[in-house]
Image (cartoon, rainbow, N blue to C red; front, side, top):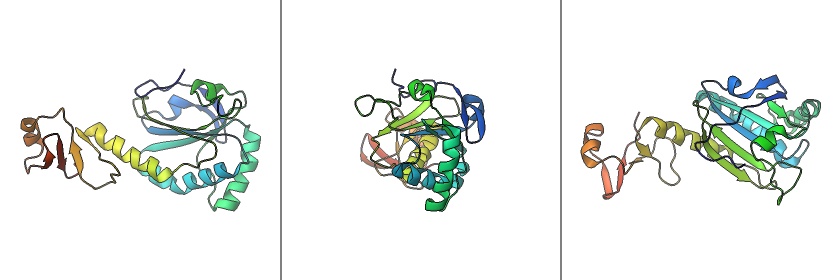
Length: 210
């Protein structure tokens, strides 16, 4: 069954390059990014894992734990990690789940038969500290993911979880945000005593709070 926004993230126990992972216990109190790979020793995946390893300090700064998944086993992951370090200039510094029996892939609906009936698509799940699914993305096997965009989304999710604002198209950290329509002008005055920039009554911009 497809996982939708707001659903409870399914829990699982699986082996990884960092030992046995009890997923919800492992991520307890943190945000998490779970992302899947079609299989080991594939070119696009190699570049993706290297990119995430380089960005790990940025994820750490945001209290986000990252965890990858491939349908191969831990032994294969260990050999592949050497290639990742050699070609990408960054060693694997987060767990990579082994899923040879497709248990986690099935739980998270990562195998799409019309794309490939045995390999996982490039799925991304962002899960909040409350263990609810906050974002899902699905890429085809041929297209590498943009992890700078995933960080941007996390910045938006974390900001909008704490303030009654939304982020406009192409928003980046530090730019203006939008007061959500559910907040009346009267209520907005209390929160934003310096006022806001209104392009339409429903389109009210303020500096990023916090």
